Figure 1 (cartoon, rainbow, N blue to C red):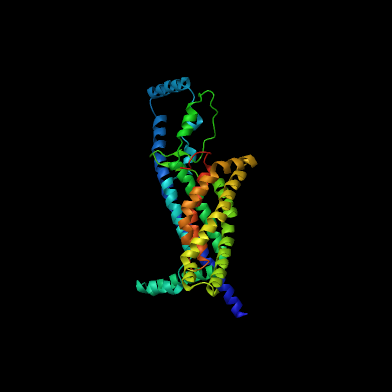
Figure 2: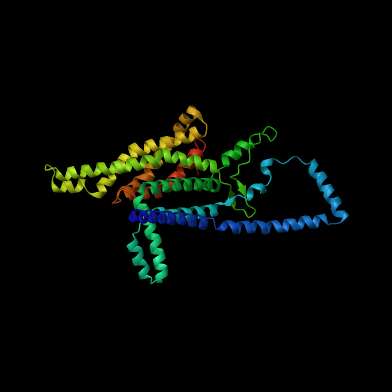
Length: 375
């Protein structure tokens, strides 16, 4: 009974350490928010002062204001899209800030959920730098708790890391689209339509320009949720099964090759070399898994956006071949690295790192217009 209580108590402390680590990472990633709020307040103070000064001005100023108002009434109305979106600016972020926060949040969560170090290595490092005993004991205790959680709950930790990877990918994709997107074709199309016949479209909250010239973005969290769900269904869950299946199959084939008396020692060494096995896994994965996964991603994105069956077919016809070719270029080397990992559980972790970049590209491609490059 005492052992069960102690084990339960240790498990609760370990999960608490993981939770505190994630909360600390989130807080650090959101650190610049208070500073941005203070800057916003400082910018608002001069505007309020000008308003007070205008209210206490002379009659001459009032007459000038009336004249300006009359001129403004005669002028053509300004489109809503051309008016400054000051109400939205309070919730927007610069693209640079998004990159910084996303990188910090992802790195911190990866360190908490996927600790690749063992407690003895942490202890050795702390002793090398001669840290105080109190600090060493605290850091070593937290590192041991997090490491034990990952060892006991490997799959849940992997899945949480998959979700964090997908969220980070779409957030980064939205920032890339705003900063590097080519809107030239859109501008040409709008110029060809007369202002009277132009139908006003809703102002996109993801396109707010800061006074300093830096582009700002109000994240579309509905899109983030949709892209995360699509990625989980088309790649994250399937790759856990796929990589595990390839690992088991390759181990069995390697054993059979080594026991085959008809093969020469040189042939056995060549066929069972880690690089040979990794390249073979890469080829099979690229031909079978990646082709299916990419097609499913584009299809689900179209379905979840309400494009229907015809929209899905159009998306696949216009984007799948480019997606597949780019995937061959990107994943050919990446999968060799992934499948070279000596332990199976390391493969999804390394794959997530590469997936962060490729899913950013996939999200941009899925939301780009047909026949147009995502950037």
